[in-house]
Length: 484
Image 1 (tube, helix red, strand yellow):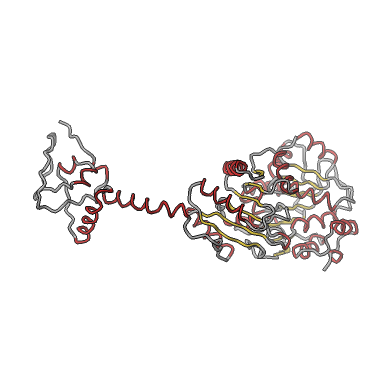
Image 2: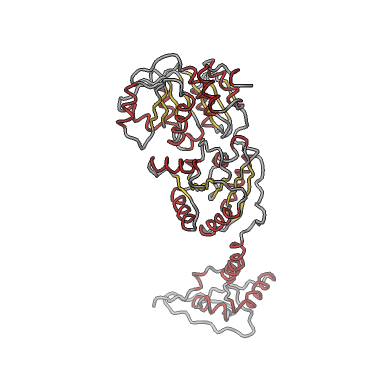
């Protein structure tokens, strides 16, 4: 099927043809006719399937008729991040080049005055993040009573970022009779509740199961030690040895980690940029533009870059940190393998990430294999484990390196049931070292020391069995000085 069979206007078809697209994606093929029929739509599709054009193209056809009024936009599109909002505006600029539509962008990091000026002129399409939109409505500079069509994009990301209360407030400010388009990649219970509340008999368009990954992406995991410098060393090795690496996004869980990894890669000679939520808007835009143009092949980013960003030719995704939420993994690796291209997603996994990896594998319904040449335990952990094991045994048995034979004898005694316990004063005055070197043997009838008197140490008997102090915590083996 071609775009000409979907009911789009001639102007929109000409704009689509000018971009070189001839065949709609499944989400576009199924959603566009319902949007043009003015039905509510619930669209569920994995990232990279063309969801943005699925609502932009029919909106352009609908908006050819009518006129915008001052401070009363005709349509409203809500996006979770500034980057996604800017990307949607780029789509309107591209496909709506032959139409005289006023498109405004309300995002943080931009002057309120400039945004107020655009709203005063009248807006056909208003693209906004929830926080900045509510700021304008509370100031009285924006009325949502004229909204005919509401689009809620990347709804599951809205949930992750805590925007659902804001979405509920906004939905109460727009007319009850509006048309609502709701797009998401996953359907957690809270998102399902929102759709049941604000969508009216929607047409459900589902082109893939929620939380599925693209088949063209090769997924691998590489074990690593817990230390951050071990992970950074492994990352550098992976970047140097990766085959067919054109560019890559490296995801971290925290903004602070983004800065650390960025500086580390830069120090080791890599051409790299950074992107996270604490950066000002101009720096974020510049980093994305450089990455898109190929000026920097590597981009270290937080999850602000995990949803919806359309950078078609990303060859690799590296999870420097395994995401805490399994859904985020789906969106992260969705930055590669877009539009049918092949991609590679590699996760650096420590022992504390095993629970998160199990949740990810359960969500996507498949196991993620180890990269070739990797083992279940990293070399640094293997080198450290014998030393840690010996330290644990020494602490457990109360022995030093020079008394391992005594420790083995005591373990045999414990196995045979010889558990002689000492509560006399002599054992209380012995330190850990003296216990290890020459165990103190209690007398046949141990006697508790008298209150207020200094305990007299017992003389060990040569024929007596060595005492077992392994059951005592270390603090009871310290020298004790009784009050006189």
